[in-house]
Image (cartoon, rainbow, N blue to C red; front, side, top):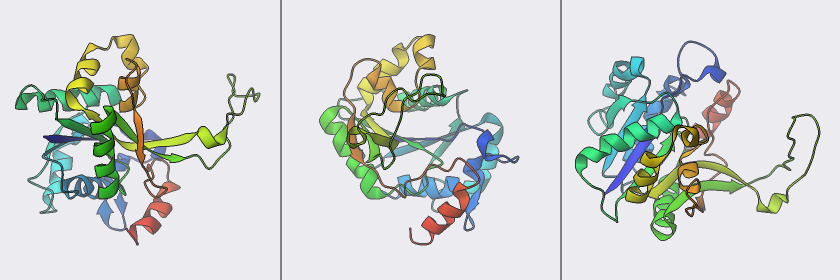
Length: 233
């Protein structure tokens, strides 16, 4: 089985406004609908869950019900207080299908990355099957500096070895849930993405295909770019 968890538990405070960013529209279609479609239509996922804020569960279902190709093909559940909490809620939801087999896979994806392609999703799954875990990524195009105080440049890593991490992030499900459920509260506070769960226990996370257009919609300035991308996506 291949499971997919779409994480939309945040309120999107950096975007401003009253509506969480996953519900904003890109050229007339809500971001959440675009992302759900991408996962549902990639052709390899058996079960998909969408984690949203508790006070937006019915709102989300109402949106999806407007689109016949999404309404009955996804479960909408309450997300956690943070990313790690939403990951755990999604995995607990899938636990109802029984103990994961060694071949079961879980795909995790940011709801506010609506331009993920089927090729990226499939590549992520193939990499996870080979290495145990995988994250979509693209080579860094910017020079990155390190500063512990945010004021003085202390070092500049070799850009050729730096990558910008995206999602999907995909894992052998049995291994991922075993680690996730074992994390202490302190360890959970260190988790910034799903791949960090694996890396906290020294597990391998491979790089899989990402793309410049696989943007994360975070700030108001991202909307015009997203609208441009959607015209050819």
